[in-house]
Amino acid sequence: MSTAKIRTRYAPSPTGKMHVGNLRSALYEFLIAKHDGGDFMLRIEDTDQERFVEGAIDIIYRTLEKTGLKHDEGPDKDGGYGPYIQSERMKTGIYMKYAKELIDKGEAYYCFCDKERLASLKTEVVDGKEISFYDKHCLGLSKEEIEANLAAGKPFVIRQNIPNEGSTTFTDELYGDITVENSEMDDMILIKSDGYPTYNFANVVDDHTMNITHVVRGNEYLSSSPKYQRLYDAFGWQSPVYVHLPLITDENHKKLSKRSGHSSFEDLIDQGFVTEAVVNYIALLGWSPEDNREIFTLDELIKEFDYHRISKSPAVFDIVKLRWMNGEYIKAMDFDKFYEMAEPYLKQAITKDLDLKKIAAMVKTRIEVFPDICEMVDFFEELPEYDTEMYVHKKMKTDKESSLAVLKDLKGILEAHDDYTNDSLYELLQGYAAEHEYKNGYVLWPVRTAVSGKQMTPAGATEIMEVIGKEETLNRIEKAIQMLG
Ligand code: GLU
Image 1: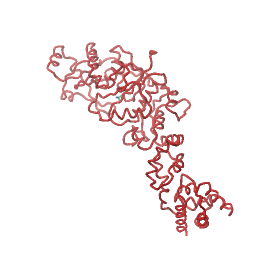
Image 2: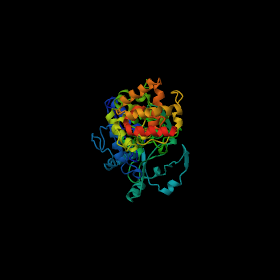
Image 3: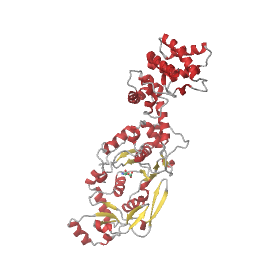
Image 4: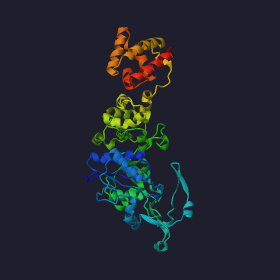
């Protein structure tokens, strides 16, 4: 490797949502560049016009912006290496120019075979997929035949000419040297009949002409990489450092797919995950620091990230772990930001005029994702139906009978009391317990059950009473007395 400034690129195809695997590639490319003060570039790979999805480019911009993976160069930010969109690069004639250079060198050739002929070729099953190997038929065409075909406007593709003998070696930073017999490689198409380059050709031409030093991508590209290496060699270009990333699987060790329900960044955000937590979690899908630390800001990742520590084993996307991590981010979040994100969920569960900020403070340290809020606070809105068995608590030494006695006693006391602040109510209930030589729990358990109707609440009895107020507290206690009586 030269000592040139590090330049990495994120090269998404605009085909829809931002898959977790794509975001991981973008993140690692960003981190490799920023770790060394290099440049991170965005290149849009839209040469497969059939897979193009309207709006997908906007998703890419939005996601990079939201996640903080700021690109130094891209379609919207010229750095002198543009155009940054492959369909626009094509119009400059760059791919055709290089393809013709390969033809001149004998490393590529025109192919005029029609669909019928291609369909009649022998097929082989490789990795479960049926692949047909082109038989080099058009390599035998004479110069005159080729020129006549071109002049007649006959549709063509340009194929890479891979010899049947020998082998090709390619180096990946994680996988080391990979050697493939040339006879096992198909003469892949470089330029398609619509004039567009294939990904296979464009990625090589672009990475070279855009001075890319490090390429990070999913290991599904590993098997094609020897072909790319042959292209670099044919041009006499130095290939970039390659880092192929391990597969991301779901909990069942199957490739993470839409079916999991959380395979894209947008899915995760819609499910109430915090952007920073998602980025942090994705950083750990295949990478870990020496000390196994887990919580990182983006700046900390920039400092710590070392691509040599990326693992080759598949990374399991563990939603339970992400939920935990998200909870940690929520706990650490400043309250105003938290409230802003929590408010829609609070309002979904609570329509009454209650102090939502107070309720938000109760749940902040208890939720893992924002939608958890709804179920946690719904009792503020309306007392749920509940079972009187909930009054029986071994540790608190309470049962239905003791609870009924305590609540009956307290009803009058609470009616006479006017200061419904948490502190005052707590003092009142504690004073009552002390007076009767009861443990606090013996009193607080039945009260909390009566005012919430829930086994688990995000706050204690008196905090709940403060929020729902005197009238509602007394109604709920009366209801409990009736149920227990
Ligand atoms: N356009 C390719 C993709 O989205 C990029 C692969 C690469 O990074 O080279 O999968």
